[in-house]
Length: 420
Image 1 (cartoon, rainbow, N blue to C red):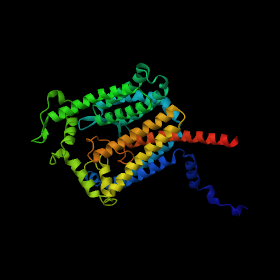
Image 2: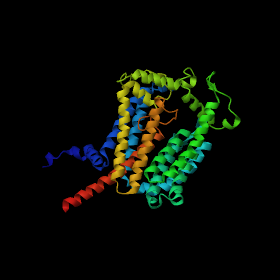
Image 3: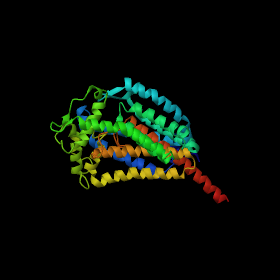
Image 4: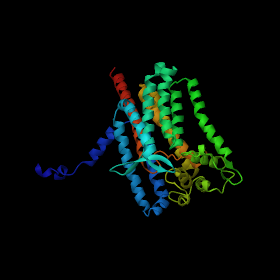
């Protein structure tokens, strides 16, 4: 009998059992899991293809960026897995704490954070020496907190003091703290919040008044940009001192670049947009093929802000349309989840986090095709990894936590019906 025992089984771990155990514990919407896999695979292909100039600049190999992105993807998938194993009610409970923590972090980042183009957006984490974009944390915390508030205030949601103010004040605080360093992110957060408030049954009158107030500074910026643009010299006129503070000149410059892009094709400010247009034109219907992009060597930030232009160049209109379809499919599955979830907190969480990711994706793709002014936002789960990538994974993990809960409730209901 002893001769028939396989001695190796006592020393060799059963990796298949470990894998099967992980798969058995992986719950939630299978379509969303498939979307995560597809987007991360696209990310590996396009980041590897678009980091050639970055590798040359820092005297590194493109393979090093491939392995780095692969490591971020593995870490991100682990974040999704462990986040989806936690009951979403726990996220709702800690939402207010994280929201309150994010406010001093944003203030600290503005005054003491790392600067890029005169804007403070990052702080460096000690020990791991990794830059951390506090606006990503604040955005996630805000939408978690909004979901909680909307679910609690449904009985008084139409009331200005009891329903509207407790929801709009946190949005205003976060947007005002983010705007000085990153106006585009603040505008996207504001727009997403308004959509969520509309779905959450906030009074339409209150929403319209908020939109009107929010459009005032945007209209002023556009007016200044048009007034102080020299159409003959194709450059910004000298701005008064009041309009030269902070990042106001950068915002004005971006608006001018967007508004006068057709009339001013030779401006250095349009270099990035023109290179993106060339990439799109070369892509045609089916693209040049994986890894065959030519504009990656000329297009700045082709691995992050303008990665969608590289996707179009390599995979054509069909590949670009597929990317739009994937994000819309993700939104559809989350809306479906919103309708199926019996609890308001989970329903609003799924909707809020899906809206912010899809709106961010639309903004990134719109910039690449020159439909919007340059925003500097990344393409979720596709652009080269960083803190934004990991917070995106955390948001998806929370959505899948809601899906897992709904799946368990449906399983219990089916079991009750069978027993009856």
